[in-house]
Image 1 (cartoon, rainbow, N blue to C red):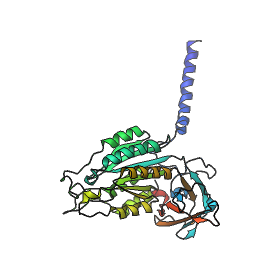
Image 2: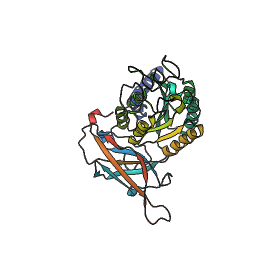
Image 3: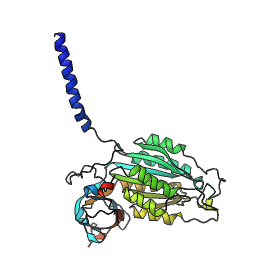
Image 4: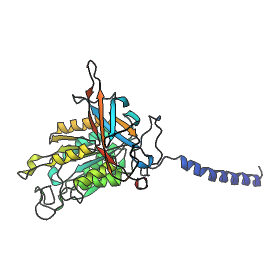
Length: 360
């Protein structure tokens, strides 16, 4: 072949590659941190992940778990078994399906304030085992500790080994305060001024806004804590609102060394139950018992793998950022029963109708 002919072929190949490059880039999957696309998934594509609530697609997505009167998970529901309403107005379902294998984004929040000194090794052991079991190929998780600070110990990863290494490096941080004395940089009981001891609400707020609000699909936070907040810049209502706006389910494993408080009083369970209930999660009190902690992780794993998702287009199309209450009831007909029984649902209690130009 003549040199001039080879030169022309080489120039032609370069030109073709330059034209194909944009097409190749367009076919690449978006990065995990990219903003969600605005087009809603087609209802018939049942095997595709369904995006979380974004009003620019006019679609509300609700993940929930159903249990019977014996506390057993119910996995055979259909859309005809449930009724949905928004601000007491009935809603017509767009889709309803069981989601056992949809991608899961999980945030694990670890309380490393002084009050957790005796139980941190249990959290590290069983937390690592849980992540090793629950994370599938399409899932991602991250690890955050909170005490006098809120620290990202491990960013998004699919590797249980990386998460375990980060968890094992977690240390109790009493912020230079007196060891073993709650509230002086190392626990939840206030002394004078506004000491920072356990930034629990700040951690929920920051994780929801900075890590999970831009993620799509199933999202959950698991918090290992005694439930006491001291020194957060946001209030409990702000933390709940941040989680609701990010469409995040919050599980709280209440692990508390009651002896640590030594007469100071303890009341973290009430606040944690509120956070879990209003976001569609659950509070599990394990005390400082390792077997109960292991069982709690197993329960959460089972629930995350036995969920439903229901979607509907709200009849109220006025998106003014207001909070809307959602009510859902489901019934199931057990074998041999004369009538259907009401099921207990773990589901978020509402959502914020954010305008399209404000959606992530």
